[in-house]
Length: 195
Image (cartoon, rainbow, N blue to C red; front, side, top):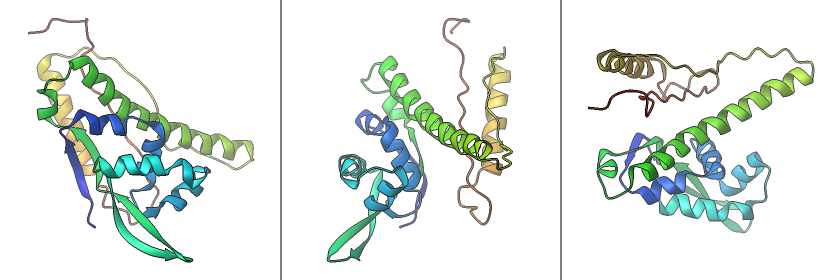
């Protein structure tokens, strides 16, 4: 199965399925094909704790079975995400859902995923330091607020998109380890005029 770069989600219920830290972790591991047992070992949990989550993700169209293999006397399904990323469609934003509900779910999916990635990356970093292994964290964390005109904000957003297209090609997996990049660039509510 060839993964898509992005799937635009049109149904808020699908986004609600994504809004769960266990499922965020599963999705991260399923960028490459794995069985439930494989993922359970990576998460250090019994496979029985994951069946429910795998079923929800499959029913929502986020993951699919890419292979069935024999594991002893049983058949074992191997899953993979259908896309490298997921985002809400404009249709979903124009639907019948309350803006606050959409914002809460969308922010939860993105920021919970970033939190999981950051916590696990920092855990690895601090574990290496504790064990006396030199660890240089080649990443950065931060939060900034800047005052921009609408035109400046538009120009910055375009630069950011171009940088992502140039620097973050998910298909370029020849060497190195994966790095995550999460961003949220938006006008802060209640701090300026709205047309």
